[in-house]
Every structure is written in C-alpha cells, then in structure tokens.
Amino acid sequence: MARVALDRVRKVYRNGFEAVKPASFEIADGEFLVLVGPSGCGKSTLLRMVAGLEDITEGSLSINGREVNGVDPAERDIAMVFQNYALYPHMTVRRNIAYGLKNRGMAKDRIAAKVQEAARMLNLTEHLDRKPSQLSGGQRQRVAMGRAIVRDPALFLFDEPLSNLDAKLRNQMRIEVKALQRRLGVTSIYVTHDQVEAMTMADRIIVLNAGRIEQIGTPSEIYHSPASVFVASFMGAPPMNLMRGAIETGAVRLSDGTALMQAPAGRGGAVTLGIRPEDVHVGEGPADFDVALVEELGAHRLLHGEVAGQPFTAHVLKDSPLGPGRHRIGLPAGALSLFDPDTGVRL
Amino acid sequence: MKRAGFANPWLPVLLLLPQLTIICLFFYWPAWQAVRSSFFLEDPFGFGETFVGLQNYTRLLDSTQYMKNAWFTLWFSAVVTALSLGIALLLAVKADSVLRGARTYRTLLMWVYAVAPPVAGFIALIVFNQRWGPLTEFFAQFGWEIRIRLEYFDTAFAMIVASVWKQVPVNFIFFLSGLQSIPPAVREAAMIDNRSAVSRFWTVTFPLLAPTGFFLLIINITYSLFDTFGMIDTILRNNPGDQPVTLVYQVYLDGFRGQDIGGSSAQSVVLMVLVLALTVFQFRLVERRIHYT
Image 1 (cartoon, each protein chain N blue to C red):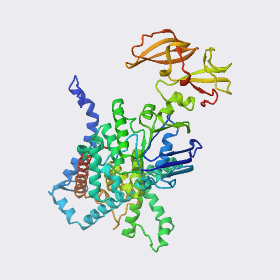
Image 2: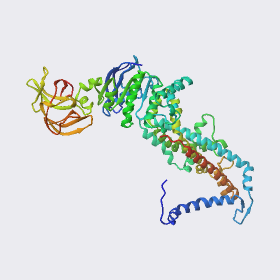
Image 3: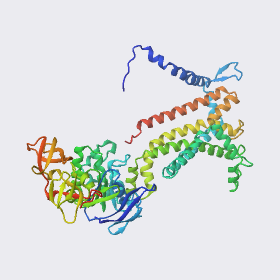
C-alpha cells in the first residue's frame, strides 16, 4: 500500500528532447491510476521514471513520503508488468515467479507457499514447471502478473500489459486485472494508449499529450467535461463532435448562425463547440443535420453527416427509423462544451 | 521436410558431383592415405614401404617427447579457450553498456580479427623481443626476464598471449550480438527483481548467452588446436629445439622435417579421431540445445 507523489517531475533526454514536461500529481493509497495518451506522449517514460528504469531529470518522486529519486529499482518496493511480458525464458514458471523473492532472501518454504498461492489465484498451478515458450500469450501475461503479486509490493506498475493480446482475451484480462487489483488493494499505475482500457479500469485518468498533462480526473469527468479539445477528441469512440462556432448577440451559435444556447457572461467571438454523439437529440431542434451514412452497430446506430457544413456524428437507438437525408437536431445546452479555438482549452 | 522430385534420377547426382569431387579429392582421399600410411614404415626417399601394423601408434605412446607435447597441447588449448572466452565476454559486457561512441569501441575491438595467424606470430616476436620488446620491458619491471625461444615457459606464454589476442575479437562479436539479442525488458524486469548487478549477470544474462557460449567453446577449442599453427611456426622460426609445440605442429615436424611419414600419419589419425569426438559432442549439444523464444 502506498501513496505516490510527483512534484514537478521532468524528463529531458540527452539529445535535448523533453519527453515529460514538469508533472505534479498524487496517487492515493489503493488507487488505480491510468496514464493514457497517443504513442510518444511520454506516458511510458513517466512510468519508467517511477520504476527507476529511467533517471528523473528534475523534480521529486516520493513513495509514502520518502523521496526515491536516487533509489535502486529493486529497493523501491514496486513490481512491474511489461508489455511483452519480459519473462525469463530460461526459467520455469515457478522460478520466474520466485526469482524476485529469492533475491530478497526469503526462506524457501515461504517462497514455495507464496508461489503456490499466486499460481492458484491466476490458474497457473498446472503450468508451474513449464518454460514460458510453452505457454500461450494469456498464460504468459498471467505469469507476469504472478511475478508482480507474489512480491506484495507497495505499488504495481503496468506498461501496456494487454496490448499484445487479441481483442477477446484483452477484454477478459482487463476485467481480471482490475478485479485482482481491487482484491489486493495495491496502488497501481497503468499505462495504455487504449482509451477504452483507460475508461473501464481507472479510478482516475491522466491524459497526456506531447509530454504534458492535459487533464487529471475520474473517467466520468474526463468523458463529460474534457479539459481541452485534445482530450475531447482522444477519449470516447466515436469522439466528441467538434465544430467551429461563435458567441454573437448574446447567444452561442453554429457557424451558420443557428442559436444553440444563451452565451455565458463576458465572452464573445469565435469558439469551438463540442458535443458527444449520444447527447444529440435527433428528430427535433433548431439545427439541420444532413445524414449521409448510417453505421449499424447492433446495439445502436451512428448517423454520420454534416451540420453547418462540418462533419458530425450522432448516436441513435437500434430501432430508430432515421435514414440518410435532412433531420432536425437539438444540442442540449447542458451537454455542450465550449473551447477556446486558439489554445483548445475549455472555457 | 519438403521432398523435391527429379525427372531424371541422374540429375541430382550431377548437381552434387562438383562438391563430392572436391570432398573426395581433398578430404577423403588424403584421410584414407593417412590412415593407410599410419600402418606402414615408409622409406624417406620413396623406395618402398613395410607393413608394421600398430607399431607407429605404440611408438607415439612410448615417445616421451610426443606425450610431453600432447600434455602441452591439452593445457595450451584449455588456457587459450578459457582466456579468449573470458576476456571476450568481459569486453562484450562492457561494450554493451557503453552509450557514447559505442560503434567506435566495437570497431576498434574487432580490428584484430583481420590479422592473419603468421602475422600475429610476428607481432608476438616483436612485442616479446628480448632486447626491446615492450612486453618484455614491462614484465622486466616485475623481475621476470622473458626469453622466448630459449625458455620453455616463456615461449608458451608468448604463444598463449598471441593466440588469445587473435581470437578475442571473434568471440567478442558473437558475445556482443548475443547480449544485444536479449530483450531489454527482460533485463529491466531483472533490475526490479534483483538488486545485485553481478547476481543478475549470472542468473539472467549468462544463461541467456549459453547457446552462444557453447557454440564458441567448440570454435575456440578447434582454433587453439589447429589454427594456431601459423603463429607457432612464426614464433619458433622453423626451429623448435626443445620448445613447446602443439600436436598439429608435431605432425608437420615429423612428416616434413623428419620424413617419418608413418609416424606423422599415425599422429594425424589421432587428431582426426579427436576432431571426430569434438564434432559428435557438438552435434549432441546442438540437438539438445534449448531454444529460447
């Protein structure tokens, strides 16, 4: 169990590239924190700095109030699960799981008991004497998890652990990992580029873009009130609709002049309007939606087309009779997000 | 395995013929000749031969000179192999962790690979020159006066140094590529699991290098037994006296200098059996080799 605090932690590589801009946040005891962002956003670098596999250029990292910047990775009381599992290919499953305990000088019978317990928890009991090359991807992933949990670490670190699995197994493991973390109550940092994984697993999400923290919040906060255009377009599938608009004569308007809501006080000029496809009322309202394509997804349908000459997607129920053509839509004021068109920041 | 069919049954034979001819002409025929001659006592001027059975072999066992050289070959080979592998592994591990100018270091370390064995021997003669050799001067500071081609041990020492020096780059290249094929994440996982870098090396890195190591072990034994001939010949300047020589050099001495064709052939056969044993050992190992994937 651990609290983790980052205070203006920064990473600059020797070639001058700033992979992580000064980042400050805290992780509560037992919390499951997900770092999400596109590739190259610095999420893995940030995780590797917490692990001690990467030096911290500036700032301070502390676990349970103790600064660990210069502490050896093996002494940080962390366990890490890697993307490609990183199992020791020459050791059996049993020795893979026991390796970290043996090096910490634990008694043999205690190691054996802990390995048995972890194997039972992860359904690996009958594979204990096999080598990693004889296991399937999902089983290797379980061994990697087993290696982490036997250590009883203060902090779990996950570096895209599910991205090498096929879609079905990934969904299953997602639930297993989350359930395991809940059961053990170990503070966890989980890195992924998959926003579905982030939304479904996290207690709190940190969205990173180009080495900078865009937003920190619960999945619901991130989804419903994105702090920037980047977060709005990165999180959610399909992403939030973003349109050019303006605040004129006391109202927020689409670029064709359609008034959507009363303007917030003290604002004027161009804005970027955002609305989630499922928040759109299709059938009645002030705006026109030219539907070009209906995407059938079984549980629901997506209508793709244009509003005021800009691409737009709306979500309708599976029994909706609407097809291609012009439809009226309403954009509820409570569901609209307004962003500064230049900086992309939420207004 | 895919089976390919040939319309004409003679075609595959025809295609194999050049290779078979070369093997027969330059390997099987001389080998057979050696086995045959080892049972005869041959007149040095080619005026006839006498069948002597196993006498050539028993003569080897009774020869104190031959047994002495056999022992020398054994420990020469063991020391050269151990040192070449050990030094190369150390250099590879160090070069692998170099971040700046890694390519330059590697190129410099590989250069010696291109040096021919006789040239290596010649360089050994220079650095161990009794009057002005830099290594002679270096060891003189510790009170050791090196006199190669005069003192048995000093000559052996120079031979070992030259052989190791020549072989380290080959091993270095293999070990380095072996190290670089270990996934970085595996090493990082080990860093989290194990604090001690030395223990990490022996429990994770070294076992993963084992396939490379087995392969190099065979290569190095073969090298130290056979490929050191040119270097030894250069150091001894064709005049061994009572200085150490390996068994391969002994074959040359007895056959070409001593004109003892029968005895020399018997020695060749002993070496052939040795190579055969090594080959069997290697194939057994290769078959049982663990594949880490």
